[in-house]
Every structure is written in C-alpha cells, then in structure tokens.
Image (cartoon, rainbow, N blue to C red; front, side):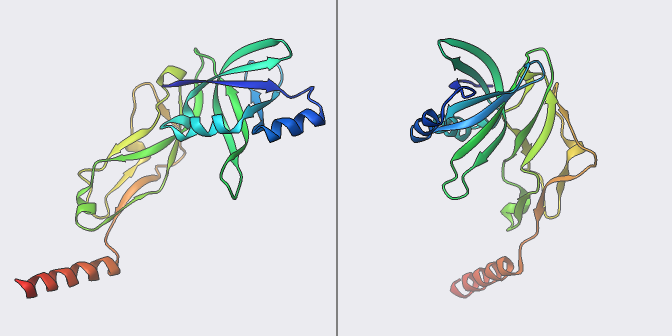
Length: 206
C-alpha cells in the first residue's frame, strides 16, 4: 500500500483572520481522531493535496503520514481517510476525517470493487452491473488492499458474484447477508434490436 505525507496545521487556536487566510490559500478543515488519540484534533489541510491523493488508485485507502504543526512543534501520525465531503458543484474536498492507524491493530475500511477481464455475457451484448462499488473489510494495516478485483471472464447472462464467494488472505469481509456484488444483465431490447439490424444489414450486403 502506497504511503503519502500530508502537512497539517492545528486549528484549535487559529483566529478568524487566520481562518480566512487559510481558506484563501486552499486550506480546508479536517479532523484527526483514533482509538488511542486522547482527543479529536481539529486541523487544516491543503485541499489540492488531498485531491491528488484520492485521485490515485487506492488513494482513499492509502496510508497518510500526517505532519501536524502546532506552533513550532510538529507531530507525526499514521492515518487513513475515514470520510470525505465534497463541494456539490466543483467536486473538490471541503472536509476530511482522518483516522489514526495502529500497525498492530485491525482496522475497518471501505475498499473499491474492480471487475477484471471481459465476461462472456458482455462479449455477447450483456451489461456488467457492479451493484456494490465498495466493500467493507477488517484487517491489519499491512494487509489492507487498494482494491478488490473480481474476475468476471467466465460470467454469462444473469450470472452473479455474491459476497460469500470472495476471499482475500488475512482480510475479513464484513456483511450481514449474502448480497450480490456484481452481475451480468442480459441485453436490453434496444441493444438486441441494434444487433438484429446489424445482422440483417450484413446479410443483405453479403
């Protein structure tokens, strides 16, 4: 898992004037907390830097070394992004929750689902539908996957993959019911009509 470094500034003692300056400079409010953190730490982080991290593959689950400055003092913490809020218009981060990571303690995280390969059904005009774009897992930090790849090569129309069928070494999937993660839907009537038209046109030109 890739690790990033992000500079942050404690915002507990920041004046209103400083807040305006931070906002003008592209700094957004955030919170850092965790099981072994005595109290939640309100901080400022650079919005652009956060955006660059989450745009990378697996970025939302990347380990981030937070360098939190408080006056002349600076403390380093290992963390992951637990939650992030975006501006509804510009889709830029406006608030982030960072959770402290302990190397020897399990953590819970949402990991993106990625289909691997092209299924038989899709080759024949079907549609791949990923019903759960993220899955919740629990594991030690070193085993946290960037993504959950599901091989769909052999799936045909109406074939599905359920959560119970998934397995990763040292990773536990958290779920209450055996829900469908992805499925191959049969072609829509519109798609079938296009295929028939193409076949008829091909036959006429033969």
